[in-house]
Image (cartoon, rainbow, N blue to C red; front, side):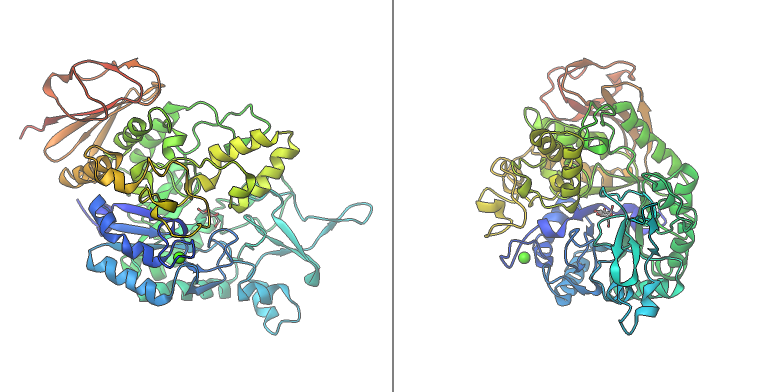
Length: 561
Ligand code: GLC
Ligand code: CA
């Protein structure tokens, strides 16, 4: 049944900047990851995904790469990185890194040459990026080539006076998009990839992979996403990398690509695909937006949770890959709010809802990706000032909210609910100053709740969120759950998250009340054959079908030989 090592991977995503600072500059670093390898191994993790570690001016925390061959001085040295690979490998753990292929920093030497007609290598590098001449209105005023809108808000075009043209940036203006139609550019990136493979990394998470191709007719549209996202030709580029570099080296390649169709998913990550091995799509991630909100619209508008959408999405993706490829299971990453704040309750039912969220996800088939701090139920931030935030996206969007008529308070609440900084506050290791992340003021503030929510406390507590994660990850291994068949119950029920998986020795029936009101479960198999295996509350009557807020139970029954 097993074909590849990564089918048994249990992945933990480390946001390097926020995990552990070891040299007391307030910034997480590679040595900080080495320091905690045993902690991660003990949790049950066997594969790390490290957010970008390359040299960068850090406009977007490293997704803006200045030098692909250099480790950021914020994070350490190449020797530190090699030590991380060695130490991890000694512990039978794999390390995959983030691979940013859609853009570079505007401080990358390629762009420095591209934008400057007097640069000796201008001609070669100009076409590494995407340039367009201005348009002019009737009065002769310079206009953007199109009205396309960046993923971070604002225009995708930035004017470059020396060339009298605009360059395209679908993220921040410090991240010009690379021109994938240029073969020399592709060869340059392949050298980068090969270099890291030769150094010993075990795979990559390919950033923004569905954006590589653009519509070079540059038709006008607003926001115009269809002209720079998921255009068919980006698969050709990925396949080229896959055939030459990914597949021959037994790597784990995870592609980030929102919005894939069923057919496209197999094209990306079917067992026979030459592109990726796994896919990260975001269908279940924003199932609680309020379409009527015009002050902080889109993902920023928090509404009520559409649970059927979440469940149907999980069921759908498991089905898409069944027998044809491999599924990933995850709640969130560095671009979404903290899951316990997002879909759970980070106040009254913090511990209970965090465990419920773990039950509802981590018995499902596929490869789990746990986001740092999720295993202790880290929550959204409590920042009171705009200046507490760090994310480049926050500041463009705050201005947008103001222009839509939002008050400062309304905008701040949207940021606390939805911004990416929620998922980037320092790891809460213990209850000493700065949560044990650093001895000095961190680059981004520690969440005020670190004295209650931290690793040390949960390591010492028998039924903590951490211990629940640990137990569930062990169960995955013991019962071979990555390969399990699953049956969802009542997918369209707005409040319950119920399913059954078939392990090696037992069937597991997972029953979760996903919301904050009591509920009576129905449409379930008779519980007589099952015994209660785990629960996130004390269950007095194991046959009762009334569930308190966020109550979750796992029952099991032996599989008859
Ligand atoms: C991906 C990353 C995100 C980053 C963007 C641009 O979506 O996950 O954090 O800002 O790409 O690289
Ligand atoms: Ca540091």
